[in-house]
Amino acid sequence: MRVDECFNVRDLRELARRKVPAPFFTYLDGGSDDQWTLARNSKAFDDYQLMPNTLVDVSSIDLSNTVLGQKMELPFFLAPTGMSRLFHHDRELGAARAAEKFGTMYSLSTVGTTSIEEIAETVSTPKMFQIYVFRDRAFTKEFVDRCKAANYEALCLTVDLPVAGNREGNLRAGHTMPPKPSLATFMGFATKVAWGMGLLKDRQFTFANVAHMADEVKKRGIDLFQFIGEQFDRSLVWDDLAWLAEQWDGPLVIKGILSPDDARRALDAGATAAMISNHGGRQLDSVPAPIDCLRPMRDAVGDKMELIVDGGIERGTQIIKALAMGADACSMGKSYLYGLGAGGQEGVERMFTLLKAELERNMTLLGVTKIDDLNERHIVELCKRG
Image (tube, rainbow, N blue to C red; front, side, top):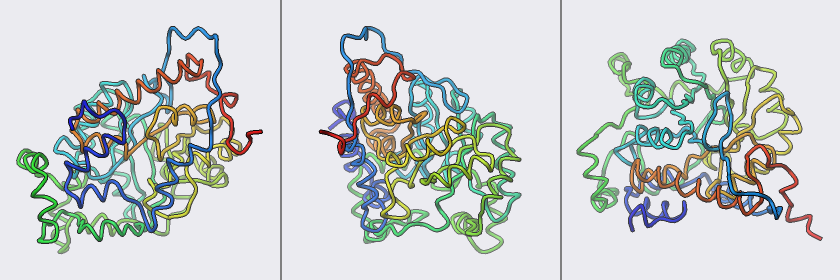
């Protein structure tokens, strides 16, 4: 199978599974505990049907959208994901270049393997940086200042990671950070020839955004991975979001909330947008799918906050459903990482090509020519069928 023989996101997943070492693919693909939430994220879209209108002039379809103050050619963008180098030597740069080619936003993770500055030097399309409020507030403030200097358009605070979820698949697959090949994982690496060849081109497996602190951290007898782990602060409260809002003068996204109450509190604390997300089913299991949380959150905040559905999106029809139900945009992590694992930048571009084609085709069949024209009249809930 080649990248151009992949005809949907699930095909890209299968190709990535064949190419990426088993410990890293399991890290990408899995969820926590029984993985109920992971499965539900995508399955939940099946509870909503699309109601088309006919005899509409659909000779021209406009997929452009405005979110976080940025005009984009597509109504979806790439969510922040950590350690992209695990999946392909193109790492974050390949994904960012693909997003630029399709005129949409790329989001860089704090725990990425490419720096804030390198992404900014590589692409000119809108960029968002995902951040944590660490124990050392000066450390967080440094990230904010670097994003301002590099002209990032938005900042995204992840709030659903006070402790890592119970990802049992990682333990079984022998996944460790930084990567430490052992007898148990040797075959998983040895059989992935293309990935191994990529390792010769780029051996970088470190948190690039804190690499400048390596010498200082080493004096404490720990490595960067341990240092980052120590910085996660379980005592964070809403005042910390308000503090971050004071440091940043652009769009501020809160990522990882699911309840209407949290949406209202985030709005009051200074967030301008929310990524409705359960961390790809990787944190607390048995929580709702983002699409099921959209309507209650929209009712809670009205049009005062932008809402971005993040989780389970593999099809253009799922994006259409989210937009029709009140989302301002969608974002995805796993789907584009499957593309990255399948073929680097080429694989991410293939994902964009497929989803864009699905959007254009299904908007045409739905009888809608512009993203802004999607609304609740296009949605029928399965449980409401007569």
